Length: 437
Image (cartoon, rainbow, N blue to C red; front, top):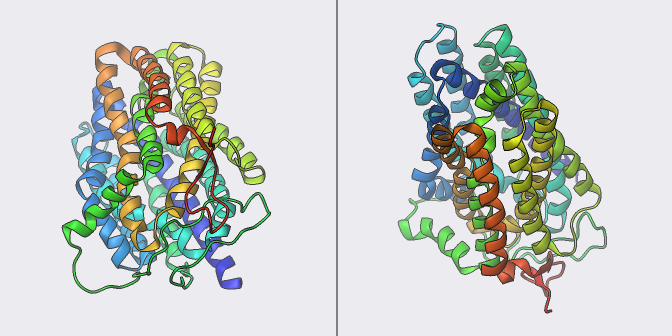
């Protein structure tokens, strides 16, 4: 349908612009904070400032994403991110000597992003039918990975030209993202909409479990606490879902080496802002190559085992990054660990929205966003604290080893996750198909 095609294009454009802005910002904010403080601990607190809003506002943000039109929630939230980016640009232009205002602005940015994340993450399942989501998700991931490559490189280059320039770039890209997401059209969803069995491997994947009456769009009344907590309860009741999300939480919590890249780049590899940008881009290159392959040959069998294996490879790549002093080895290690993470992202991003009833997606994805935020930003805080105690290399090696341990423990504690054979592909398979052996 033409309207669906336009909505997909608009969504992908919004994802690209927002992701490029975000990655440029992450790169230069970390660099600027480290230049001002020379402290790994400060990098850790930067991650905590990014994480805190998503955690503290989880009950509110998910309920809002379910009760109001998601594209409008996203557009308004991104507009506030634009204003915050302009604030960062204005402060950078003053030749700052203190990082404290940066932390305050990052906190405000995190508040806006806490509202944007569950709304935007639910949109793919809102604009295409269930059988088309596995076709859309790799393409959205590929779009994000391209931004992951370009954003840090552009940010690092602009930072060497003028410290305020990357923040202006952020503001422009975020404004374009807000415009794009505002034109996305949500398809009408029928009550008890069934799954469609297809033969195309790009489309053969999960369907909505527990079909339920749709209560979306603009709704009256305010969200009750019990309603907001339903996302937590839903995740906790489903052991496969709980295992997959918690695996990401703890694996990346311990493997958050990327947060220490400003210190690693300068102290161990001897490169500046441009080199740091390329190190950040290495992650996008590795993940992009893997995502490109998934777009044409998505994972269809041994889903659970491949998820656990991907986490183990992520840990090995982190270990390699921690022990090397060679830029090329570090570049390859970052590409490998990011490629492994892309496999994990593909499995979760396909599974989670499709096994969640439409009327609960905002709440469930808000909770998952906290888990993801915890694994990234809170992981950055853990890495910063460990870096202050052990040094950057010691912290990264410790994190890589812990990630390998997590993969082994989850294989034992969550056998239902380990034994997931494939994504469900018919109306008679409402949940992931599990290998009976």
